[in-house]
Amino acid sequence: MTRSHRPPLVAFAAAALALVFNLVLGPAHAADPADAKLSKEDQACLDCHAKPGARKTLANGETLSLYIAPDAFANSRHAREGCEGCHSQIDTDTHGKPGSEQKLASKRSHAVESTETCRDCHQKTMKKYDDSVHWALVKAGSAKAPLCADCHNPHATRSMKEANAADNAKCQQCHEKISDALTASVHGTDGENLECKDCHRTHDVKAATVGDHLRGQCLSCHKETATSHAKWLPNAGRHLEAVSCAACHTPNAARRVDLRIHEAQGESKQAAEQVGVPQFVQLVSTSSASTGGLDGRALWSLLQDLSRGNGGDSKSFVRGRLEVQTGVEAHALAIKGQAVKDCATCHKRGAAAFQAVTVSMIGADGRPVRKGATQGILNSVESIGSVSGFYAIGGTRIQILDVLLLMAVAGGVLLPGAHLAMKLLSARRRKAAEARDTSDTD
Image (cartoon, rainbow, N blue to C red; front, side):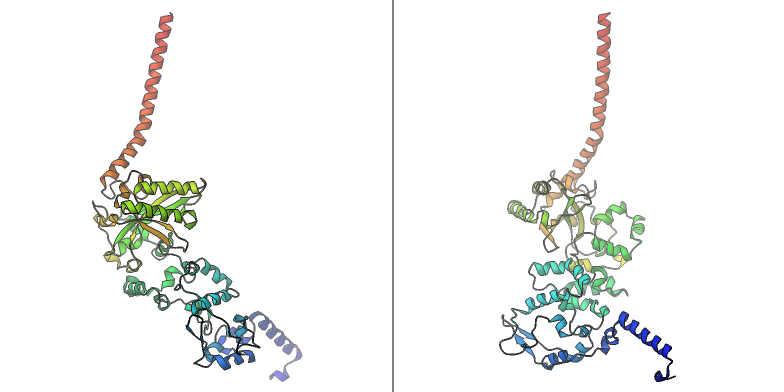
């Protein structure tokens, strides 16, 4: 039956169904960018911008290409929005005429301004990006931190899947050595071929050494870790909490102890910029000038100052963590059989890992502000309370720490016992004295 010979009821139903599909799914060309057709206004724009040599000299002398590949744009996700959808600030009546040129200071400033346009349609994604270390770096003035257009060509994006595919090649533009280490690691050669986004996410990228995000990423794949380590590793829970995965799984890496300043206010969290980075930097600089690094007394004073600065609402303390010293080493993970299992690597007198000590806080850009500390900070009387959550008696073969902690444990046991003994002895003497007084009276 041809369309012209359909019964009226069938024709009406077909028309109604088509209307519903159009309302729900939108026009056919909007569902598939490949079918997109440019409007007359957009075609007029491309009459100039489709010329490969189109360019503009900026205020700082840089040259900005104005070329837009017409086929790529026509088939892009943004074609349906049209040129004015993103470039609404341009007056189409005067654009391109002498004296109407848009003043641009530099490529970077233009890219930053263009990123704000993305917020109009991609609000959820931009919210994630706003919480990332990349955006924090942009706000801090970084000229290298990635913006939207650095990863997504706005004039050629074909699909959301393609737009969100932050592949290793894009990350490699800034993190070349880390990318090479990942490619050569067990995650790059053992059939896994992990991409950066598999661990670091695409838009809400956090500073790698802040918090427990990366440990959580490791455990999300290696779910048996706690059980398997408990079979051979003493106090496995403490090790998994205080030792980074890479510290054991990158056997040839240089390691360090990082004393992370935390604040306890309800749920413990790593101390951030607003609770005292300026004081931290100033105090470390003053202390380092005379001692070569932050010492135990200076650390104790800093923690007291931070606690008072919070108005008594939270208490600042240090949580130690054993980790590798560079991001490259953190990505150069070896196969399982090469992981460090010899306890003496760390638990021996003069272990290399305990010769490098740093103290850190989270800075304004979301990354840790890390300062060197003296080697003696771990066995300082002033900092003993700060590292107790990280240190175990006999754990580093630092004898003075063992003695101090044993004395503390002994004091915790003996003092209550001595108090009870004195109380009993005093009660016995009091009863004897009362008995003598009664006898004298009689």
